[in-house]
Length: 286
Ligand code: GLU
Image 1 (cartoon, rainbow, N blue to C red):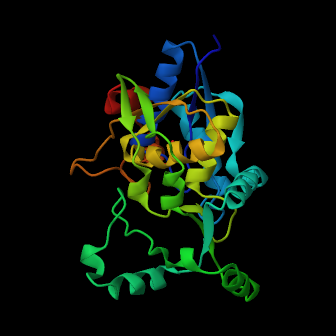
Image 2: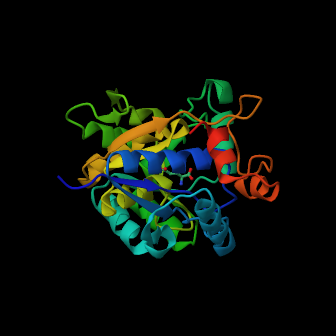
Image 3: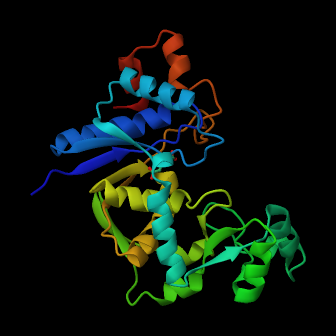
C-alpha cells in the first residue's frame, strides 16, 4: 500500500492565524500517525490579493510552528494551463455557460423578482444564488456579447450537472469514519472560472488534490459544504475522491471564526509578543 498523502493549502492573501496553525499541525500529526507524507500548496490564484511577500511570510510562520512539509511547494498561480484544460473539458460537455451579470446586476435581478431578496434562495454560505437567466442565451447572443468585450465568468449549469448523476454522490469522512451525502444542488450555478482567470477555488482545489495524489484532505469545518461541490466536479472530471476530515474551528472569545484581518491571533503578532511554539500548541489544544 502506498503512503497516505496529506496537504495544507493556505491562500497567501493575509497572515496565518491560530486557526491555520491548528489545521496545519493537525495535518502534520495525522500524517505522522499514519506514516504518511505532508505537502504544502499555496492557493494563490487571486493575483491581486496574494503577494510574494505574504507567501514568504507564510513559509516563515509555518517553519516557526514546526510544520515539516515535502518540497517543492505547489503554487497554483504556476498552473493556470492545467485548470484551463479542465475548464475546456466542462465547456466541451456543455455543462458551463458564460455568465455576464455583474454583482450589481445580480442584486437588481433579485430585487425585481416576485418575492425579492428575502425569498431568494441562498447557498450554504449564505450568498444569494445566481439568477441563472444567462443559461437561456443563444450561442449567437453569447458570441455577440463576448465580441463586444463584455466581461463574463463561467458558471456551472447545476441542474444539468446534477441530472448526469445516476446515483447520489457522497464522500467519506475518515475521523471518525462515516459517509456524508453530497448536496451540490444547494449551491446553484457556481463559478467555475472567474472573470479574470480560467479557474476558481473549487476547480483548482479539485484538480490539485488529484494531481498531487492527495489521499486525505484535512481542513476546517467551514469547508464542509463546499465538499459537495468538489465531489460533483470530481465526478464530472473523472477524478477519484480523497477521504476527508473537516475539523472543528478555533473560535475567538466571542465565538466567531478567526479572520486573517484580525491581528490578535496572527502567528506573526504572537511571535513578536514573545510567545513560543509551545504556547501555540497549547493555545490550539494540540
Ligand atoms: N485555500 C483555502 C483556504 O485558505 C483552503 C482550501 C482547502 O483546504 O481545501 O481557506
